[in-house]
Image 1 (spheres, rainbow, N blue to C red):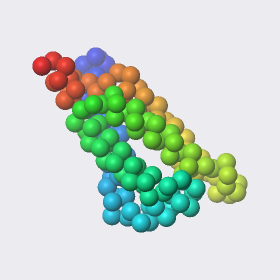
Image 2: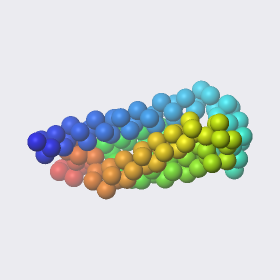
Image 3: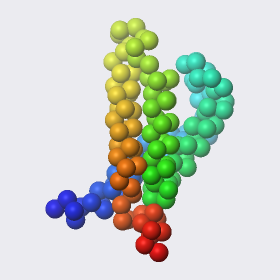
Length: 137
């Protein structure tokens, strides 16, 4: 049963992961100054550059996942980005106890997303992707 579902599930998985990154990247364009301010407030070095890199990674990586092009590399870059961002933006251990719950949930959600991206990097985009079309051409 799962063999017949492998390609649709891979596509759905890519789309759901992209749904996290693409809107986040696009929102950084219109809210660039606010995002830079937030990045500076959590101690991100070079917050303007970090924000610019973040929006490019999220937009390009999200689009790559949607169409399944360069999927393994995109997933690896997004996994590293997500892992690093988690330590800067969801450092629940540095907050007062009454503020830790939401940030710990966000941190561990990002750890799980990183795991999903690593699985995608390991196994690829599936047959319903541009990567598969290039391999079979």
